[in-house]
Every structure is written in structure tokens, then in C-alpha cells.
Image (cartoon, rainbow, N blue to C red; front, side, top):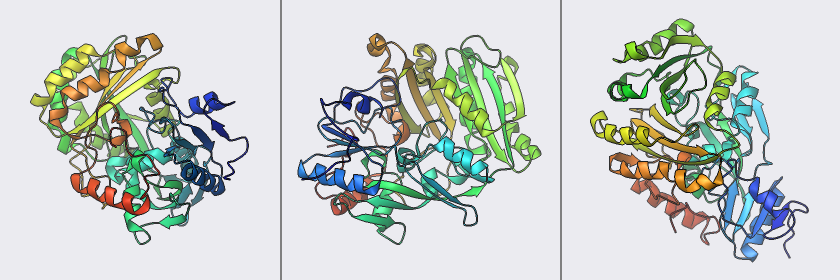
Length: 446
């Protein structure tokens, strides 16, 4: 008889189950999917017991770290949900420029702890996102155009396999499993208990520029943004966000915002790196023009979360593309014409061209990243808004090189997130480390 942790396991239909299930999803749209058992793990023994229980009852296993998966990948009907949110430890070694952190550690919390020691890691852009799912799927974060997706800074992991074996994995130890961990996302086939992270010096300067344009400047703004893609300084994140309502910067109504962080050694370098963003041909029509201002990460986190409100229901979808602006603009015009009320928004990110990446499962990206986020409060509006991201991305799918797992919608729209070669290698590694298929694969794939 397998003993699960007392007071922290919840059977479907039993006391505490509804709260335990609901607490694993960050946004208010909780899918109608019901695991047979939920186990809240606090130590390795809890995990090993949960895996043994799953084997004894022939249950597949889903894993939750922070619950920010838009599709709630971890919630599956009839399986066992392993809730790793309690693994929120972090040990920082400034001398070795390393940190060891659990999957339930909040990225923004880790960033603040590192900043106190003048250190830096490319944590995710949103408060509340825990590093587990973020790092497994790739990890686009602060200054990632310089440091690469955050999974490139994962130098090792502590994991527990399907048969309950505890392993340390890195490039020399179980290299196929290590390769898989850096990009497999919700399809990873082991339980991560800790990430070993390479750290960096805190950038001396964190700055920003801010430009805002009316929607009728879309053609000029996005065409220009595509044209300068290869010229944007890699220390700059050219993020373009279109939304129906801007609540800051003195704007009343819809706007296309170019809110761009920059990380540099001096303010002069930061201003120089941002200068290109003042060359948009629609600059004379700009509603707001701030070529440079000093800022910091806490301020950025607060600004970002204005689009991700905890009392709302969300859906999302995305694509990588290197298509020319002329091909993208019909889809972008359709997105702007159908854009729901705030906090729904359209994100355009100038990402590449990128340097050669390390050998890892993360294997698809492109010059431009496009993502759509639908956000609404009333459950009765689900039918009205839930498919807006999917439908628009499906219309533009012929222009995509693939998708990013951070904002995936694989259960509703299967799409390519790794190269064919990488997928074959992932399948081989899964067969070796999880031959019984104990861990769920990606949604939309049997």
C-alpha cells in the first residue's frame, strides 16, 4: 500500500479537492478537467510516493509549478496531478555565480533576491510565474536577447524519474535527459526538484523608451519595426503592444505602445542603444515620445502586470515568423479590427536574427514573435472571447515557423514547437527514461 502525504493529497470528489484543483491555475478560467488525485509535494519522498501511487493505479502524471500555463496543461482528466509549488527554495552562491532553485520559486522573487547581491538572471516578465515551467519550455525573459532563452543558463538539474530514481543531470550526466529538459516544456518526462543556474552581474543601468501611436499608424509602425529587425541592439527589447485601453502615460483610448527595456553599462550606452526606436516614419503622429528614461525591474514588473489581471479569464496563442511585413499586415489589421477590450492585447516582439544556440530541445525561433492574449471577466463571455487568439493565429499559420511553448494552445491548435529532428530525439529520450508513458505528453499529441 502506497502512503501519500497526509493532509496534502486530494481525491476527486473528496474534501479539499476543489480548492486544491482551483489553486493550481493562475487565471480564472479553470478548464473542466479533473485529475483523479492531487498531491502537494514538499520533499523528494512526497514525489517518490506520488509516482509509486501513480504506477500502482496506472495513472499518468501531470506537473504544476506555478500554474501560469494559459492552457492549464497540468490539469488532465483521470490522472495524478503533482503540485510542485512548495519547492520554492533558492540558494545563491555569489562567488561561484550560481544558484540552485526549486521549480516553485517565483521568477520575480528570485530576481529581487539576486538584485540584493548585484546579480542577475533572465527571469520571466510576469510576477507570479515560477521558474519550473518557465525554464523547461525555454524561458524568454529580461535581457534574453543578450543571454539567450533562460534554459541556456540552466547548467544542471536535480530530477526524479518515473521509477522514483533521483538523478543529477547535466551535459556529462544523463545528457539526453538534460538535453530534453531544456525545451521540452510540459512534455518533459521527469520531475524537476531543482535547477542549477548560471548567474550574471547585475547590469549597471536599466532604462527604457516609450512611444505610443494611434491604431491608424499600424501600417507604418509594424512595417518599420519589421524593417529594422536585424538592426535593433540586442540589449534592447523592442516590445510592441496594441491594446484598446491605455491606462497610463496620459493616453485615453486605444494605442500601439512601444515599451522597450534596455540593459547597459552606462546611461549613455542605454540612450544610444534606444536611439533607433525614434526613427519610426510615424514619429510625428506619436501620442507619447519618451526616447529614454531610467527605470528598474520592480517598475517594469508592475507595468507588465497591468495586462495580466488576476481576476480575469485568459486565453492565448502565438507564432514565430520571419515573414515580411507586407505578408503580415493583413493578419495584423484583422487582429486590430477584432481586438477585444483591455486587458486583451497583441504583442509583437523583435527577437532575431538570433545567434547559434546550444544543443537542446528548444530548437525553433524566428526574427519576430507574435502573441495574442484574450482577457475578460464574465464566464458568460467565454464563447465571445476565448477563441480570438486561436482563430487569428490559425489565419496566419502559413507564415509561421512554429510556436513558443510559453504561450501555447496545443490542445486547441496543435503546432510545431521543435524541429522534426528534435522531436524524434525527444521521443527516443522519453522511450528510454519513461518507457511506460507515466508522464503526460504535450496536449494535442497522443
